[in-house]
Every structure is written in structure tokens, then in C-alpha cells.
Length: 86
Image (cartoon, rainbow, N blue to C red; front, top):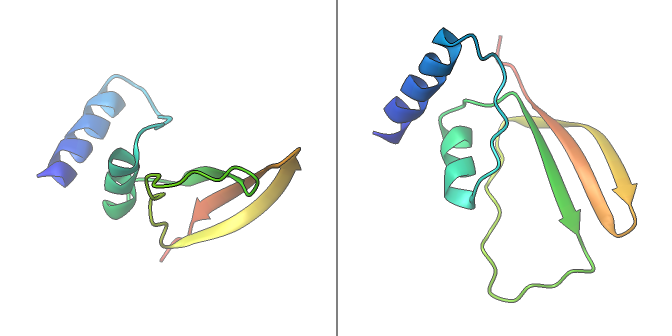
């Protein structure tokens, strides 16, 4: 169901000549794109000093490779690319 919606959405954007999409959503939205293997690049920002009790779990990344990490104050930004099976 959801996979079909995402593929239809991306196909519609492609038909409008939109070649790049930034998805910033909640964990369910992001996990939907990850599970459907409809992503090429991700940026994950973590902050070890920030402790949130009973927060929402981050999406589960699979099939990725960290290409770069940067640190800004107490934030760490990881740049990830999807591992190609081809």
C-alpha cells in the first residue's frame, strides 16, 4: 500500500521534471522511504549531550555506507549513501 503510494508520488514528481526530493519527516515517513529502498543519500544528526527520555526511535538504516562525518559543537553530522547492489 504505502510502497505503491511512494512510487506513485515519486513518478508524479518525475513527470513534473522534479529530479531531487528532500524528505524531512517523522520516523514513520522516513522509515517508509528506507524500507521501500527509495533513497540515495541521508544525513543523520546526533547529539550525545542531548538526553530525551521516552523519545521516538530513529529510523533503522539498512544498506548504507557512511561517506563523511563532521562535528559542530555537540552535534555530529553523518553523511550516508545507499550501497548499490549493482
